Amino acid sequence: MGLIPFLCTKALTGRGIYISLKFMAKIVMKFGGSSVGSIDLIKSIAAKIAASKAEDDRLILVVSAMAKTTDELWNMAHMVSERPSRREMDMLLTAGERITMSLMSFALQEHGLSSISFTGSQSGIITDNQHGNARIQNVNAFRIEEELDKGKIVIVAGFQGVSGEKEITTLGRGGSDTSAVALACFTKADRCEIYTNVDGIYSADPSVVPDAILLSEIDYDSMLALAYGGSKVMHPRAVEFALKYEIPVSIKSSFSFNEGTLMTKLRGKTMENRVIDAIAHKEGLIRYILSTKDKLNELLDIGSIEIFRYYMEGGSLELIIEAKYESEMDYLLQDSGIKPLSKEANWGFVIPVGLGINLDPVFLARILKLCEGKAIQRISHTERSIEIMLPSDQVKDCVALLHKELLGDSK
Image (cartoon, rainbow, N blue to C red):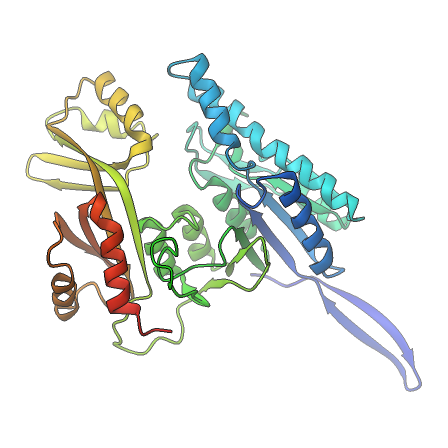
């Protein structure tokens, strides 16, 4: 992590001079679209920052586009063009975050706080050339550091960067989370705080399980399993950055600024204790089954669609994607001359996450018994989870049932 910068102050007492060390914290704070979804919300966040900021804190704010702005821009593009080019889509979509960053800077300045806003390219977020789903390769944050040294709050447009060829790029779904954690890593921040419209990480989606438990802590690996399992609070790429660089991340409510959930290293677990931390789920998925005899490499190499899950067996490859990627997947298949062996909608997953549960036959037996009567298509596992595939309309009932039986007495 490196040394934390500090201020040295001298004071004269009756016994001579003493030196006081005052540590300065560098904090990256990310605010998602629902948190900055209106002018009033932006002003509220600015007021909270003004009230809570320590005098010498060095703050980097990463902001998303205001709620629904990205969708509106996306729809506008498709009103003009049936299939907009990815390069021009990146140029268009990055406008949303630029609006938010400027408004946030105005709001902070109204509270007497010195601030400056930067686009992703101005912030030095360097990516590869993949428009629409670029990967961060480096962060040259010298301009951010210069402005922090001047005592300014730096506001960065999330979700975006610039390629080595000076092309504007976007980072794909959850890109602002990725921007924030990457900046925390490369600027050696003391911590990263992700502000959203929920209080933190729950043991299940509270909209499905009203008595879900707010977790005070979660380790990186379990959070990664939840994110890959469908949890909407943080994107897997952001969790991967935090895991790789061991950056502590707090997930908090932008409405309360309460403590929320701390994501950090695994600690305090009882040896050989098989427990469920939380349950993730995903609905409305589409399953394609393709022949391995087709030109799959050309299709997959495009890399523009997030694959939720894939399985290969015998001569077929099964791809499972979110419904929002359906039209693009159909276009790519047609363009590649590939006709699916089958295509089925309305699949879902229920994914309990916990340490030591994946290869425990007793735990598997319990899951199977609890899920009797459900039309389970497949059960598989990762090192931190058990993945249950079943029809989409059975997902929420399954989540509620498993939570009641496996986590109901955890309060």
